[in-house]
Image (cartoon, rainbow, N blue to C red; front, side):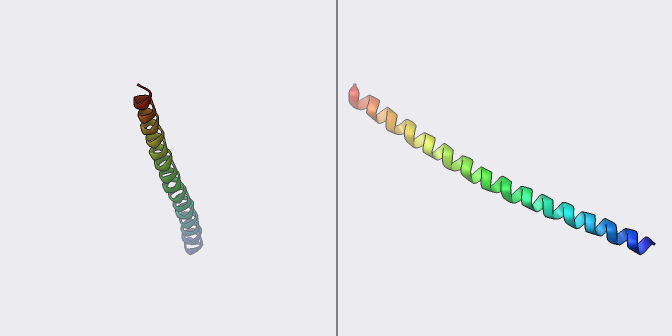
Length: 56
């Protein structure tokens, strides 16, 4: 009975680890995407600044 309980606990821990791994991969992907968006925003702001300077 104890061995069966240990196996069940081990299986649950493996599932939790797999879920955590998926969450971490998704978080890394989201962080990359946010970084890309921030870089694009900086580029747009710089471009607008140049346009404003050209108009002045």
